Length: 236
Image 1 (tube, one colour):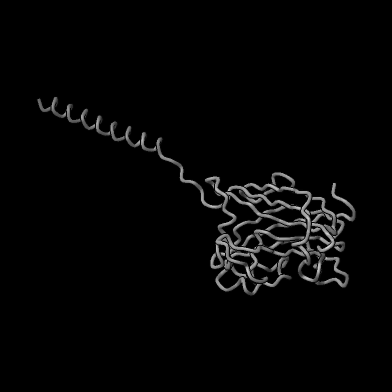
Image 2 (image 1 turned 60 degrees about the vertical axis):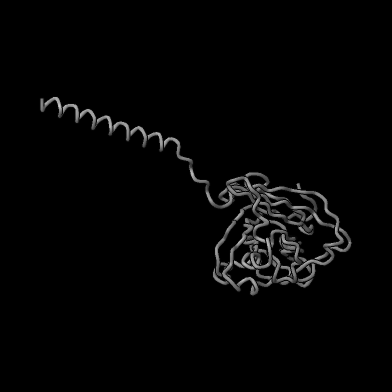
């Protein structure tokens, strides 16, 4: 009698373990993978800007508002910042290009405007164009060097962006300049989240500094790598 009772208890125990195990298995099978944080893919669109008013002047451009937009080139990047399309550019050295950043999170939502939602938010972000060992325009006597100029006019909330220290670089302008023709330059478009108060210390000539991480404390949010080959006449 005792043996039968023990057998029944043992079988009941096994049934309970099996039931719990099955429930656990079902729970694991139905678990939803958490969505990754960060940026899954990005684009930089280069649009040529030309016209009699558009010209290089020291660390910035003149006449951009009166320029005419033309040819577009779109560079696409994966989640690691590696270029997946148009990662090697042939650009006329004297041409001026408008650069527009777009980025998407792992939900497929565009997020680039979040960095310039308002002044308080944008005060923490700045774009740099790192690498390439460019001859900067400010280091030439004849306006033949490179310029990278962040240039937004409004925050997403509609208020005006005032002055060079408020510019972020979600929209920017670039020219390689005659002095940088020749060898291919490996560069990275970097969007950096800065520590509070640091952005106001970034000058226009600081866009290509090799020591930017040390001088401007913060964290790189994006590092989009591509190549620029500057040519004297026309792009291939």
